[in-house]
Length: 242
Image (cartoon, rainbow, N blue to C red; front, top):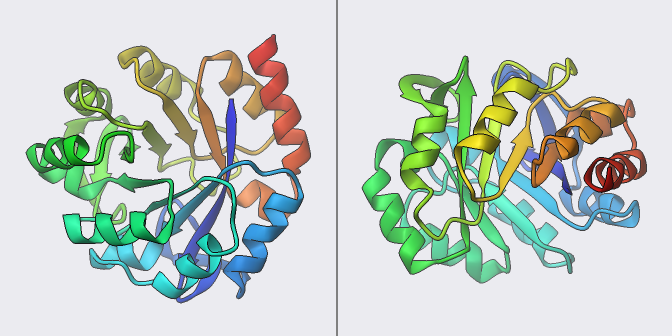
């Protein structure tokens, strides 16, 4: 199972939000490239980047920070947040990002998402962020009546890189993942599913691997030191092999 350390960008800084609330922000560093290099030095083989300003404003905002990371990385980096048109997709892939995560536009215009998946096969992941199993969008500021697993099934026939599934209620809360929701999504589709939200301990990582998740994204736990990247990687291996 892949382990993706998260680097959330806001105002050029590395931050974490509680449950996606922009008013509950903690800044963990002002040098995103240095943070990326730290995770690589500790064994990261993938990085998950989020443009939080972009998610809220609907356009790419932290471009300089994103470029500073990608320019010094030789591992796959994915980016989500504010990617809502083909021009932005072309721009971001041109920077060297391995793949992009599209959430709001995929929820609101699934026909458009199908079209761009065909144009950029294997380069786009669908970001499905949910509260109580219902999809949220616009940087988590809007909730919908769309059922998360139904959205995933409706798009699963496309050449999608992965489903990035986040339980908003758990995100940043250090309370453990929503294992039931993650397992439900894993059963719903055959494409790779990456778990996000609430991953706090090595046991959380191991259980997700045992549940068949293809990857997990870890944020606050790594930054606050309750979980080391080395322990997370070892747990992922243990859960996969076990």
